Structure formats: structure tokens, C-alpha cells
Image (cartoon, rainbow, N blue to C red):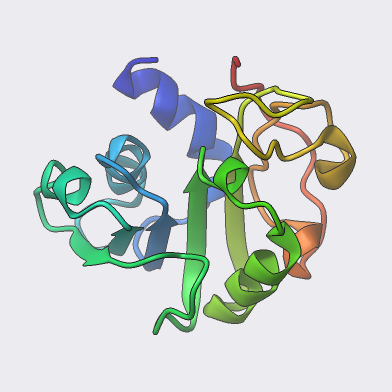
Length: 161
């Protein structure tokens, strides 16, 4: 996928420009940069990943934080969180999603992008199943997530897997 595809995939879930956002499991920042383009220069984005080398590739005016997003993070009152291709590395998703809910301000947005896999494999060890999101496997959750204690978003786009 190219940059324009990533922007298009999350665009409907972002809403207003600006604000405080985090990208959990940011890796080299492909979705972080897409989010930055949508939010504009007035936004504050924190990219979180365990891999310091991957985070170095992000650059720009984006705060990077070497950390495991499955552990407590000092992030609060966020306008939104992107979790792109990161939840499939988490076996027990519920505690992570509950912690994510606590990071969001009331009305905050959670955008989940995951591969369309029904069974684990070496690249997607713990898929985010279709029954979890209420949509077909691989749908991106643009908007808020019921799993995170918010209203359910309608399906927006499918991420090829």
C-alpha cells in the first residue's frame, strides 16, 4: 500500500484536524505519517513501539516513545488512537482495549486496522476475529470501538490480508 492508500484507509475515522493522538504499535510510522497528514501541523502525535530502530524512521515533529503498548503508558485524554496492524500480536486483547479506553477522552476515537485473517499464522499470530469487530475480517474500525467502551462504528474499508 502506498501513502495515499493509508491516508484513505483511516481518513473517515479521524474527524477534526489537530488534537492529541497516539499510534500504538507504530513501527516505522507508515500510519503515523498518514495520521499526521490528516491532522495537520497543529496536532500532537505520540508514536509508541517496542522497536527503537523502527521509531527512528519516523522523524518529523512526531513524539516517539519506546514502550510496549500492552503495558501501562502515561497517555491520557487523547482525542484518538490508531492501532494499525498491532493488535494481532496480542493474545489477550481485552485488557489492552480496556487500557486504551482509559487513554481516550470522552468521545475519543479508536481506529483499528487489521489484516483479514481468521486463523493465526507467522505474520498474524493472534488475529482480531470478525466476531470481535462485528464486521468482516480485515475491516478497519474507523471511528470509535465498542470493544473500547465506545459506540460501534460502521464498516469503512477493508485492509487486504
